[in-house]
Image (cartoon, rainbow, N blue to C red):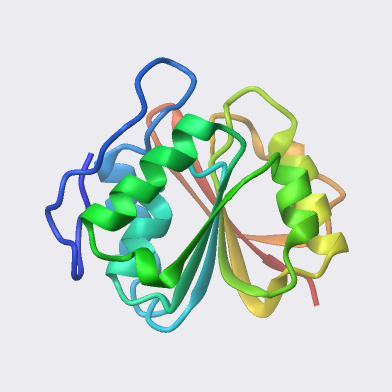
Length: 180
């Protein structure tokens, strides 16, 4: 697992041992960031279910102004901090060790991008989006990007628009924007 582009380009990131986390594949991460590359500079991003922090670190490396990383695992937040130090991106980062719903409730800023890459086969995506919308954490023109293996029907009856869907084998990226 490595940083694909920007100030930390080609740096390898530490990952978490075991099967509880599933890092985003480099080809999926590259496709994701290629599609939003011109919107990343000066953005504020939230990497929820951050794992090793690869998505937020990629955003910072490409010029995001700030990234908030949230994971409820002590080991994950420890690895995120190590990766931020290794890439010299720690000054623009905040790492929070909390449950995703508690983390969302503690935030007071609005985000340009929110990355959701929770454990597969859970209800976390829907619950996180509901909480993000309830707390108004997404900028007017902001985007939620979900990495999942589930069908889009998990998003039914939410106040969001599906802007794009891209499949990479079992993995699916879903790009969401606010309605209205």
